Structures are given as structure tokens and as C-alpha cells.
Amino acid sequence: MKAKTVLPAVAMTAVSMVLTLAVVMMWLGTAMPWPVALVVGLGIDGGWLATLAYERRLAAQGDHNRAVTGVGWSFGLIAAGVLVAHALTAEASTGAWLAVAWLPIAAKALWLVHGLWEATALTPNALGTIRGIQQEARDEAAVARARLRAEAVTEETRLTAVTQAGARVARVQAKTAQALSRAWSTLEAAREGEDTGRALTSVTHRVTPDVTPRWQLPIWGPTDPVSAFTLAPALTDTELDALVDEIRQSETPALSYRETATRFRAAGHSASEVRLRAAWKRVA
Image 1 (cartoon, rainbow, N blue to C red):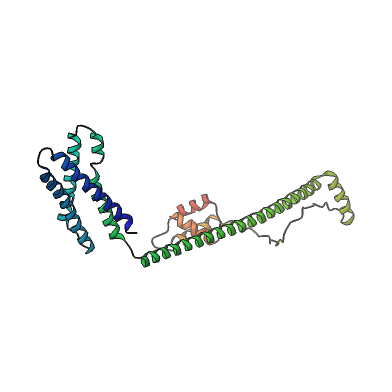
Image 2 (cartoon, rainbow, N blue to C red):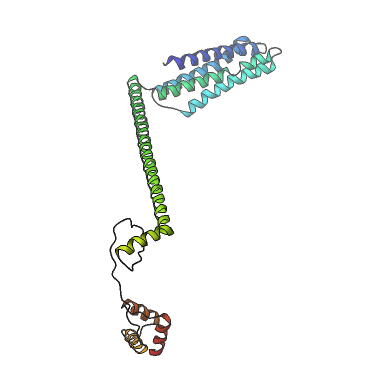
């Protein structure tokens, strides 16, 4: 797994170093002796490689140095600058030289990616544990989804059954109400008919002379007889005045008209509003 990131970085580094050395030899070799140009090219590549090696050593120890990283990127930028300058001053194939001028920067970027991979790398045991946890979570989620779907289907079936039963009950009630309505209409028509009244009168007259019956419709349900109540005799003005004055003076200070009227009726007495107000004014 480590080779997936380190091999591209090594290959890109080698290509960029060879290309930088070749460009320095071709470009500066015409203006100075070739040993000097070789030293310059090797100096650039050597500085680049030395800072890279020191960065890799610090990374293996779990450490990091910003100064070393800055120096390494400086050498990479110098190498890229040399390639760009050569491409711009070349008489032919300028585009081709510019196309490969990014190789030193790409090599540094690949080493940065490799360093990030190493910083986040895990052991096979840890990866296996993580996969087990993820699989367990997926299993639990699948079981929960299946349970929810089953509960939804069950609830839907129950609601359908309840709705159908309610619809049947409603239809039966509607039919019953319609039948009762027709029966009531028939009874009402029979009660109001003239021929029916004469027939009942003739039958009842033979049983009980001098009695004209009144045929009542049947009552559906139990009934309780209500005893007749007798109306209390109306109070005279004198009695009314005495009661109002007694209620009004029952508290100190004297009650208002509204409170007096409320207690008057709560005591079971009855009188019209006009008489009660007139009595309160007389005693007040």
C-alpha cells in the first residue's frame, strides 16, 4: 500500500532532477564552461534532494520543521524557474519546454501527498476494526428500516380494517335510520288521515261512550311520568317590599339591586323584573 504513493513521488523526483540538470547544462553550457554548469545543476538537485531527505527523516520521527520545508520548496521553485526561463529563451519548442517546467513542483506535491498518507495510515488491525464497526452499523440500520417498514404495513392494515368496519357500521346505521324514517312517515300519515280518525272514533265510542280518543304516536324509549306542579300565588306589593328589604339589609353595607335580585330568585321567590325593581326603589 505504501508503494502506491512513494513510487510516483520517487519517479517524478528522478525525472525532474534529470530534466533540471540537462536544462542547466544546455542553457548555461553555452555561456560558461560545462563543469561550472554541471556544478550549478547538481547544486540545485542536491539541495532539493537534501532537504527532501531531511523532511523524510523528521516525518519518520513524527516531527516537522517549517524552515526545512520552506527551503525544500525554494529549491523546487528555483528548479521550476530555471525550466521556465530556458523555455522562454529557447529558439524552438518553447511550448514543449513550458509543458515540463512544472515537474519539480509536481514532485514536491507528490511527496506532500505521501507525507499526508503516512500521517493518516492505520494498521491492518485498526482497519479491520473500523470495517467491523461500519458493517455493524449498516446491519443495525437495515434491521431498523425493516422493522419500521413492517410496523408501517401493520398499521396500514389495521387502519384499513378499522375503516372498512366503520363504513359497514355507518351503512347499517343509515339503512336503519332510513327504515325508521319511512315507518315514522307512515305512522304520521295514518295519524293525520281523516279515515283513520273516524275509524278510531267509531271503535272507541263503542267501548267508552262520549269519549273521542286522540291517537298518539308511540314513544321510542322509556319514559318517566312528570308530576304536575302548582304555581305559587303572586306576592303582593307589601310582601314583595318586605322580602326585598330583608334581603337588601342582610349585609352591611346594603346590597345593590343586582345582588338583591340574584338572592331573591335564589331563595325561590318569583316576581317580574319591573315589580322587583320598583320594590327595591321603594325600600331603598
